[in-house]
Image 1 (tube, one colour):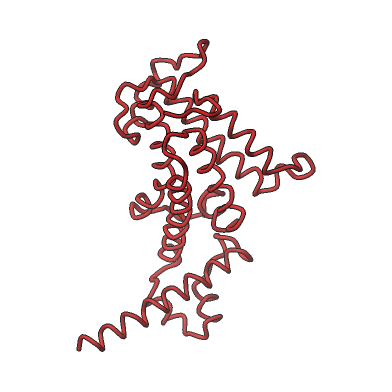
Image 2 (cartoon, rainbow, N blue to C red):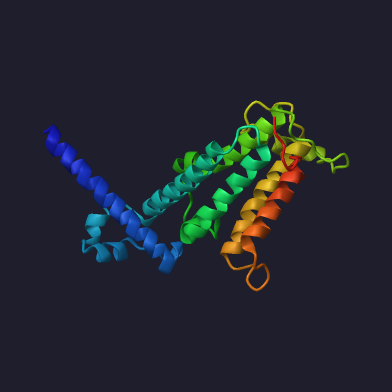
Length: 239
């Protein structure tokens, strides 16, 4: 009984993985909105009713692809963070930024699923949250560690966030460990840096830099250094 059940579970896991792999390839040709369980079933030589036993609906398949994508991106950023010297906060920021860009360029259709236009009619369930925050958690950790080490020094002249943004700053601060004293100004500088990172990657991936920015990697590196300075990280800050 146990051996038979294990064999069935293994076959199910393999078929589930194969369906997801075919669906990822379908993203490249049809886009997320055109994802079809019936088309996947045809390519696998299975009846559509058989595929529905693994994924009851297109949305279930989309959710799996989204979770897999977020986990893959998050793992890339986590590995970049772990490979960087602990005291070099600018280095860790730049390495993590490059990990996002490199993963996106290697997996453009999956990145588009995560950060492109919303899929009509699809609403991501709570199941996606843990995977979604993996990369953001790393960036929050970098900023938190730099702040606790005294390695963040914002410019003397700065624009103070209006009081109405205090609750939003508190929401961001809650996902950054052990920084209850981090000023709202630094919070919004970090938030601006994060959005600049994903904005740059999205612009590059979706063709907005075509015929304009040619030295993409060098320009990206320079821009991320600028965002690091915006946060208050000095070029070679170490604890």
